[in-house]
Amino acid sequence: MSAAEIVTPSQEDAGFATKAAAFEERLVDALNGGAISLMTSVGHRTGLFDAMGDGVPGTSEEIAAKSGLNERYVREWLGAMTAGGFVECDAAAGTFRLPSEHAACLTRAATPNNLAVFAQYIGELGSVEDDIVDCFKNGGGVPYERFKRFHEVMAEDSGQSVLPALRDHILPLVPGLIERLETGIDVLDLGCGRGRALMQLAGWFPNSRFTGYDLSAGAVAWATAQAEAQGLTNVTFAVRDLSTFDRDAEPAAFDFVTTFDAVHDQANPRGMVRGIRRSLRPGGVYLAQDINGSSHVHENLDHPIGPLLYTVSCMHCMTVSLAQAGGEGLGAMWGRQKAVEIFTEAGFASVEVNELAHDIQNLYYVCRP
Image 1 (tube, rainbow, N blue to C red):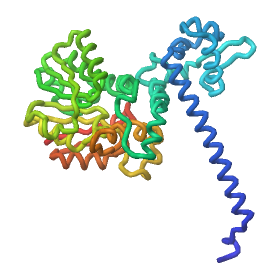
Image 2 (cartoon, rainbow, N blue to C red; image 1 turned 135 degrees about the vertical axis):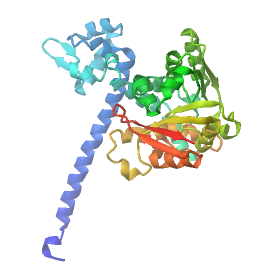
Image 3 (tube, rainbow, N blue to C red; image 1 turned 45 degrees about the horizontal axis):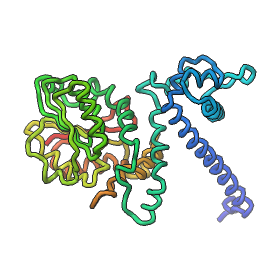
């Protein structure tokens, strides 16, 4: 070893101190980011961002009156948003302003670019932290019913990523599909949640027939009520446990089957996909939207929302699967490699993997028997 290669203890200590200080700074940023995420969720749910979306400066009293909220809480929220750099404060005038460039990704008017929607996941997942800690110690999972708002947030999430792109970007991934829907075919959506995608399709294509299955009775009840309110007679929803879908799927009953972020949190995802293959008629197509990621952790280091997706997976997607008898617990970050493997094993001869420019979160698989 040359003299230049010798590292003295003081040099080692200096390097350690530098790295430790850098990580400490990163951790403090993470703590502030978590806090701001909670306040961002509050700002979205209470309509505060929408009330400030016009960019007009206002005092805490004026903003509270404009949004119909309690001034003391609004004042403290404004403090957090100002300290976090989301809101600008004019100390001399005592006013607060949401810059237009911030409103562009924080208000409902900014849909489908409203990132405040995603901040809601932080508080929702935090509500089951005690249950998750118990699972770390004892195994098992946290069932769907422990999550009070997850389907509501997911519906709003898909309202930005799926619904605006459904007709112009997602359906065209299957050539000729729109024409077939206009003529009239049978469509099934598994893990339909609140059924917003199915209801939109049912409205567009009155000659086709749509069916949605989901494990959550609350989500199905909401979807059924909404469909009735909209006068949609060509769509039905039902509560169904899909863990045995490979055995009880009706053979050759559907022309088009969809899943939107629904495979990875099933108790028996492989069985569900086999059931999908069984349920397709000749010439039928299965379209799966699922999380865009690799099955290998080291390949997700540069993923723009990798930490968020792994957290959602650990505290919802994986655990709701493990909460069911024999649940596989794939998790949201099962990745394209595992997805292609499972789709192929289920009997699909062709699996196309598509990315859409508007959606960094998902991949779109077109599977044909």
